[in-house]
Structure formats: structure tokens, C-alpha cells
Image (cartoon, rainbow, N blue to C red):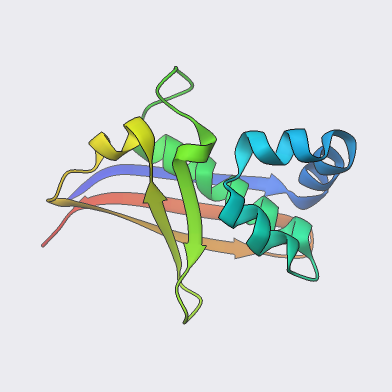
Length: 125
């Protein structure tokens, strides 16, 4: 049974402009150290930052926390399994939203200009 669903799309150029303008202040507000290390190591780092930003937004929508004090971008960490499949690890107060009988799955995609993600929270079978 689906308990939460979220989707987001972002222009890669918008993320690039924010990083170029605000630098580390922007990155450190939104991304964990592991995410910054991963994205910065890629040839097209802006595409990877945008994908992770879209994933964090989609997860926030699936959790239905909205933009209250409970949501913190750094509490949502996006990483890839060795096979490339994206995963989410929740930190801080967001961990309480996923009990042992629930799972959160995401799917990320990107093109030259956009990155998008869908997030689904469902009961474990």
C-alpha cells in the first residue's frame, strides 16, 4: 500500500547558478559531506547536485512534512548502490517517519537540462 508519493523536477542550470553564486554556503546548507564529495568528483557535477536536490524535494513531498521546522535537507542523504541504484538514508528527526514496516524508494532521472525524481513510501510486504 502506498503511504506517500512525491515528485520533483529542477532545471540543472538553476542549481549551477546557485552554486556559482553562493558556493560552499549553498552546498553545505543542502547537501551532506558525502553528497558533496560524490557530486564534486563527477565530470558534470551540476547534473548530480540537481538530481540529489530533486530527490530531497520528492522525499519531502512523500513524507508530507511540508516546509515546517521538521524538514532539513541534510537529513535526507542520497547515495548510490554499487549497481547505480539510488537510495535514501534519513537522519535526524526524519527517521521517525519510517517505521520498521515501511520503506522509501526513489527513482532519479536526468537529461541535459533537467533532473527529476519520484519518491514512494509504502508498506513492506
